[in-house]
Length: 172
Image 1 (cartoon, rainbow, N blue to C red):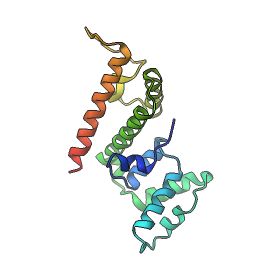
Image 2 (image 1 turned 180 degrees about the horizontal axis):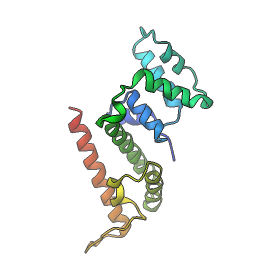
Image 3 (image 1 turned 90 degrees about the horizontal axis):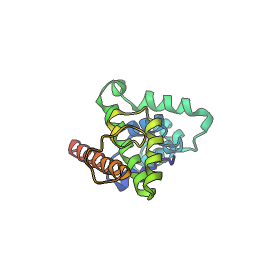
Image 4 (image 1 turned 90 degrees about the vertical axis):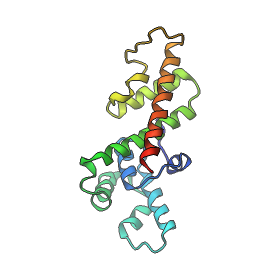
């Protein structure tokens, strides 16, 4: 599976912060190097930053120190309530939305797209709200005149539309 980049969020006009970065790394949707990208962005946008942790993160991240960097972000930039309130869920949904959109944009073959989405679904803990477009889950097609693949793609499109509307209405 491909990793997300910060410009994937920018292209969709979605804001991100350390919460987004942490959730994305937790679910393996970002590489660790996203920390460096974000720290560099913070330094470029605010040249008066005198935060040694941000400066350290702006240097190349060592894969062997992943736990240390995640603990640093958790301790220094996330509120203690982040893990126990709706903010975690909001960030998860945002990162998941961007990942699903990226998969949809980059994989044109329906069968391959649905397989990749199923792998993604497996990797993020089988969220119940995604069942309607997972290819190995039972579906009730009813009297539908569309193929099973098209039915799943329609459900995916509806899911993305609803997620987008929810995200944008809550950000105002």
